[in-house]
Length: 314
Length: 290
Image 1 (tube, rainbow over the protein chains, first blue to last red):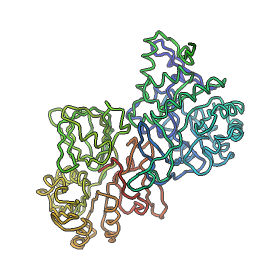
Image 2: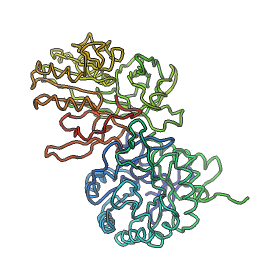
Image 3: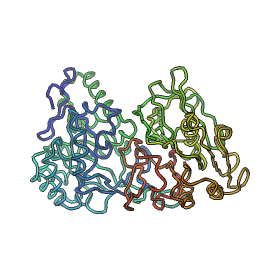
Image 4: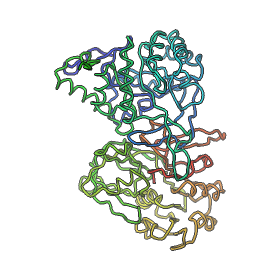
């Protein structure tokens, strides 16, 4: 990234995730922004801090049967089941398009075994145009793998170690909130060599069609996202920030600049925008502009001054 | 015939009118800025009241009519109230504002080499077919020699929609479940009895309606030379191919099944590609492309 792009009108928005310099802290959450190109008609990709693409597996995955989504109060459930084109098709068919933008591309990866994570990281390390890896150990909608890797500290650490050993790219580990103590997992992946953690993935949920007495989702359960989960996500981010030395990326129901600012103030180094992309495909740009306007209004010249500036003294 | 799709945009639409034209069915007319791209038949838009936090997600509605008047784009949407989103729309008064994302999706393909075009509409499924009739087949004078027949079905006579936009422009066949108008029974049964009248290799069928109707159509069209396109509905979050929420199972030439996105790869699909047995049973989707 060019360093001059970090300073929009003397407001320094640039943040660092491991060795990766992002021109601003606004990223997209995996699974909500496709492979980027779907949003190009609405959204100037060059302005985004980073795009995290749809989760990638070693081989293409078909995903779950329909219905896959259901709206719930201030949120939605999804059980897509990590449908994706596979790592090789991503590199061959999607990456060339993304390379034309001045944009940090983070590949979100998913394996059914620890070794699959390692192999995907190995393949990605040689790919031109990938700037970081987000390791998904937290998907609630697949039978094998997914949250199974993210719920136990030793397994989460093992996955992190294997990915770390294969790549010099920044490694972000995406954590599940469906655990008793998220900081325990966060500390384990930090010790295993993660450059950052991102949280939270979706909360496992369910919805029933009372007329038919059937679940609304074919998968029966799904992952809850959207504004409904924001307070939970914010609490977990705040808790995790206080335990870790590595950056924490905040995710969970962020729909406005005010939402993003809450996470930054609570200590998140960057934020990922998820479900809000479905409601307004240009929402990320509006959030970025809103953060900048807030900083001007409060006379904050550098985003570092804002990050973790939460006052909790009485 | 290849269709040229223009880039969608996000616009603010002003409600011009929104009358209840049949029980629980409304005709929403929106005025949009002139840069709103002209929709192709079968395309849809995502609609949301951005002043409200709830419902969260926009709702997909297929295009029923479109024209340009005095520098504005005028969009007609025919919808049935099925849940929270459409219920909110039904209370919108002239002057209210709605966010409109579109036009979206891949629509119907026009067939130039056929002699007969058959529309099969169930309930509010008549909306995209009406737009196809006018914007596709009637607008192009070179297609005027084609015989067009519309089979329009509904539960009751008062739920037979869009007759004013259909009956004087093509042959109309109506069917009602209760026999209060037209053929007494399912509209697919009516078509089945008359299907033999259409020479298969020069006949094109377009259908939109409930999943049960689409499934029946799959059974009655056994003749492989009849071409058939159907418009599907499914719950959607984004409408632009990103969320993968609106999956439909399709079969390729080797019989291998994969999922396509109703919003981006459809909503119009070749009937024979759809794995009909895997389409979810009807449920109260609350919204859908209609």
